[in-house]
Image (cartoon, rainbow over all chains, first blue to last red; front, side, top):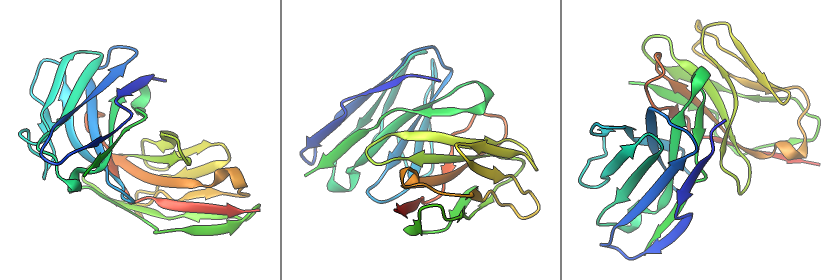
Length: 113
Length: 113
């Protein structure tokens, strides 16, 4: 299994501000993924982050709104920029490990007022 | 594009009842299929998986068989327990292992004693 930690675990933010979420993995992984889970909804993939290259964004998500960094093989950040109440969600990072298992972090619960 | 459709909840059953949660998918190629579970107050956990047609994934008494002819991956358990109360997500990943997951909307299962 993979041990994944996220910071912060939760936050309450004012609209118009930005929040950076950190994801740390206990071992090196090639691919990290960021998901959003809106209240009462399923998980939606935001982007895929490879070390040393630009993140790949899914339809409906753009780099200006959700910039991602991937400075090494165990760490990534997701920034939620210029927040609005519609950004209130749980944000999860995930990694792909051997035998096609994908592990998820505990999530960051964000409330935008 | 890829999509996953699963039965909407909540599904309420009595303890020791038989459980089926339906899941069908649309995808190109040969996706891998997964069931994830989210217990109250906890993170997302992999329950079981199948990577090719006719594979059966199983864990904790739950089973699901990858049916390519019906594009389905229904989750079953012969006798549910109160501790099985959770939200269950069906998901797929395109073949190759390099992509993130596409999730269904989730099914909230409630088991009554």
